[in-house]
Image (cartoon, rainbow, N blue to C red; front, side, top):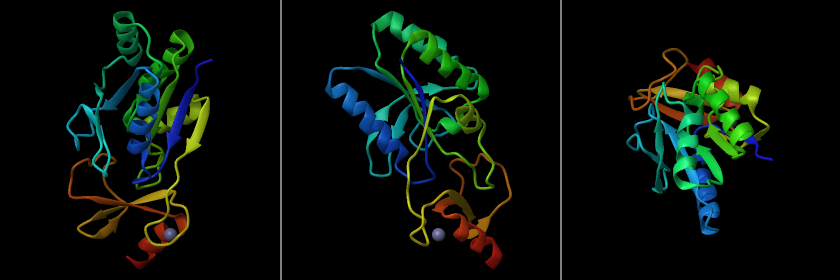
Length: 194
Ligand SMILES: [Zn+2]
């Protein structure tokens, strides 16, 4: 039985690297996969999954009005079987996209692995992540350590010109902002010092 997976991690936890690894593992066995990425992330162009280590993979762009179920159904009709659907930066998906992912799993019997951040720099759930937490069959954490200490990072601090900020819009992709993964204690410390 296919399942919907949500694999979440904070910044720099290697989510994109993990997608490329999963895709490679399937393809090595001659099992094709489909990779999607929301277009809000333009760091690598709109049609690639990329890692800081420099690996990239082509990906199908997802727009606000993209129907993921129809997109996967069309690919299946055209090319036969796909063994897995992978989604990068899934926090940027909307609720309708997540429902479409559940239909890919339940009606087309194709497993879906969605990778993304859980909470934003203000510790609010992203829309995609909120709905993945609600709808996913399996939820897994991709762990990384705090930038400042050796605890597990569960949050992210946004820096603007080197100063930690906890106000502003959720979406600032490609701005001058910089993000660091941190533990809860260091997150709170950063704003106490401010
Ligand atoms: Zn820390």
